[in-house]
Image (cartoon, rainbow, N blue to C red; front, side, top):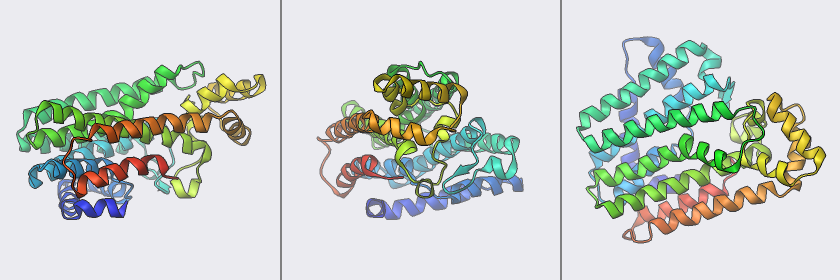
Length: 320
């Protein structure tokens, strides 16, 4: 990741400074919670995507950096809200904001960060960006509600699962790259190519995230293995394992999702691995990786496009 960030190191520093400045509030608790979740770090993939794509397409550094901060704020706000909805206690290796301060402050600070993102966009004065991000945040909210609606329902289809991860994850990835192309004043074909890259990268990223819940190390990932089961999420590895496992394996996973319990996580991990569910999910992630790279085949070769290729590879090769 550091090698990829180096391609936009100066721009990344501008974004970091902008994020810190825009977290300012006269209310101390707002700043405390805002800095707590921002300072936790994470991969910062979404603003990185804005910077890589924007620089590759020769966009204005100031506009691209401001938009990258917008994208980071929207992602941060969704994390605060998600952790409350999912009753999560651990993120990025430390207690979630709701575990530290409670649900109400986390939700309200999430609202503050959402609105700060839109304040930034108003200052940018670009109606196409405003329209893109208004639609994006709306679709993210729909995706979260759809995921909540399907929680505890083991009969969820693959199509429903793909719809959830598209709206809850991929839509912000594609907004990051499409927005960068808009700000670089690119033609519609280039904007669509940038959007396609972000979409497929986001899909690949989430698919691997869902695999890691059954293959990853809790310490490395910074979250608890089995969290998806405790939340009753019927992710693709589980859906595939139920379709191809024995009667006992199907019943085991079905009951775990329905009861939202990771009590039998060890047996379920064995079932997921023995039914080829990990390989199946990874194969779909790899297909999305290939489509992401193909989407930007006509972009001029430069350090940033090279790193966009590497980022797509990293999304499917990571272990956290």
